Every structure is written in structure tokens, then in C-alpha cells.
Image (tube, rainbow, N blue to C red; front, side, top):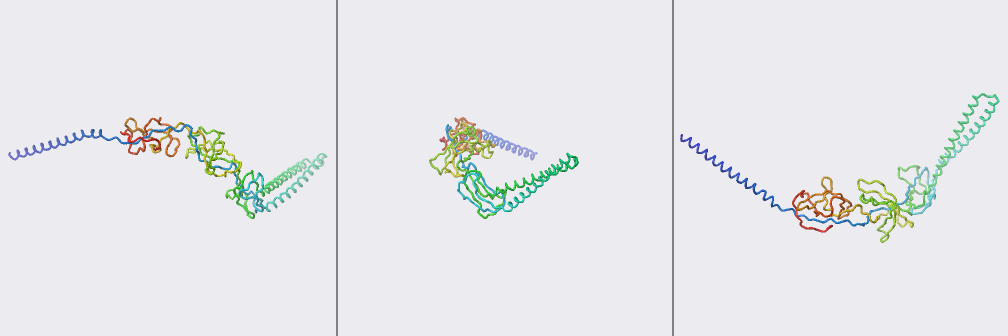
Length: 380
């Protein structure tokens, strides 16, 4: 009986101890829960630097890199096999339309032409004989000395002789035209800028796939200025509009050109369209291939706001900028224009009154509390 009483007392003591421990744990948990909101409410807002968007200049000139190309440019190939026996021009020589640049000797084609002419003479003789036989047969048939079958046979002979004569004449004409290619002529007035042949060289006709052209002739009294215009400026580029062309090698000089044509297609990789400007070059001072710039006055594309490039971030494949709304960070999707180096154009998405956050890092979240540490001027 005494031993049972002692067991009951021990169990009661353990229960009291457990209850006390639970009360202490619950009190600690309640105290911790009560402290968490206070700690969250007292978190320090993230300090950020901001910038104010600036308006793009209203009449800024669009400056495009450009290359001067010859207005006409041709590579001349041999059209006949043979040896070069005459070579009349050097690089830099000015030539006129139809001027002979080189002569190719081709004795094999000459012999073929002579044989074709002989075959044509034979065909002419056979045609004459067939025609005479047809006339005699017609007279004899009219007098009932020959049958209609004989007349049909003579008519067939005459037609065959005419066909043979036509074929022989066509072959002779083909070889005569081929012999005309012995003289390599300039197709237009221009300048010889490449010469890849000397006297005695063996040349092969119609070998364009090898790239072995004999001469290259370019027209330089008028140039084709080639530039790529950004998509945002295409609405202001007009066919026939006058533009200014400048080259670093001609410091202080400006050249007046005119927009002749556009490709009509935007390159998906660069977002630009090819533009060609015609530029007179009467003294041929500007060589083909020279790099320069095209200035198109008053072309800025749509009205734009300028922000530093380090304010733009990519989220889900779309350009965004972060702004301060009240005391919270917000991300706005924007449409970009031209990248001007230190600044970039914003065409859509903001109105210019926003405080734009500089260098928004990956830890900055939508709706996060922020405060302005420093406001800086645009482009700083």
C-alpha cells in the first residue's frame, strides 16, 4: 500500500513538471510570434539612386554609317578559249564604252567558222539544185509527162534543202558571234580597277564559277552611298529627299546626295533597312569603297524619352525599367528606340514624370519598400 502511494506521487510530480515545461514553451512561442511583426515592420527600406527621364532633341539629325560604292560595277570574263595576244589597259585607266581592253587569239574557233561557212555554201548549192528540179517537175507535171507523186517528192527535197541551208547558216552565225568575243570591250565608260590578265595568258571561256575575271570596270563619276536606317526612322525617309554625306578624309567638306531607293525589307537581325543614296562625283575624288556617314536632318523617329542604359533590365524577354511609386518599387514594360551609347530612347511605357531607378539589381522585387539615396542628372 505504501509502495503504491509513492508511485502515484511520482507520477503526479512528472505531470506537474511536464505541464510547467509546456507552459514555458508556449510562453516563449507566444513571445516570439509577438516580436516577428515588429521586426518586419521595422525593416529598413532599400536605398536606391534615381534619375529623371529627359526629352529627346526635337530636330536631331540622324547619322548613319555608310559606304560609297561605284554606281556601276562589272567583272569581265572571257567568253572564248584562247591566248591573250593584246592587252591594252592598266588599273586606273579610264575607258570609254566599247573600248577594246584585250584581244584573245583562238585559231580553233576560226577554223570551225571557216568550215561552217563552207557547209553553208554547200547547203546553198543543194537548195538551188532542189529548187530548179522542183521547177522542172512542175512544168512536166503540167504537161502530163510526170505524175503528182514525182512533184511531191521534188517539193520534199526542196524543203529539206531549205532546212539544211538554215541550219548551216545558223551555225555559221553562232561561230561568227563567238569570234566577236575575241575582243574584250568595256560595257560602259569607267575606270579599270582590276586587271588579272597579261599577254600570253591562256584563258577559258565561261569560267565565271572560278572567279577568274579578266578585268573589273567601275563607274565612279556617280556613287551609290549605302546605309542601314533604324526601324524608328523609316517613316521620315522619303525617296528623293536630299541628304548630307561626309567622309573623315575630307574634313570640313560636305557632299549633297539624294535618297534614290530603299530595299523595302527590314533585316530581323539588326532591325534596319537598306537605303541607297545617289551622290554625284564628277571629279572622281571619292574612291569606291570609302566609309563615311549620311546625315538626314530632322529625322528622330517617334517622340522619345532618354534614360541611361543602366536603367533598363530584361524580364521575361521584355525590356523593363524600375520606378518609385510612393515608397515602393514598380517595374514597367517599355518599348525601346535607338541606343545612343550612354542613353537609350524609350518610345512607350513612361510619360517622363517618373523617378527611374538606376542599376536595379536582381534582388529588387516588385512592391519592395525603397527610399531615394541620391537623385542624379540624366546621363551621369
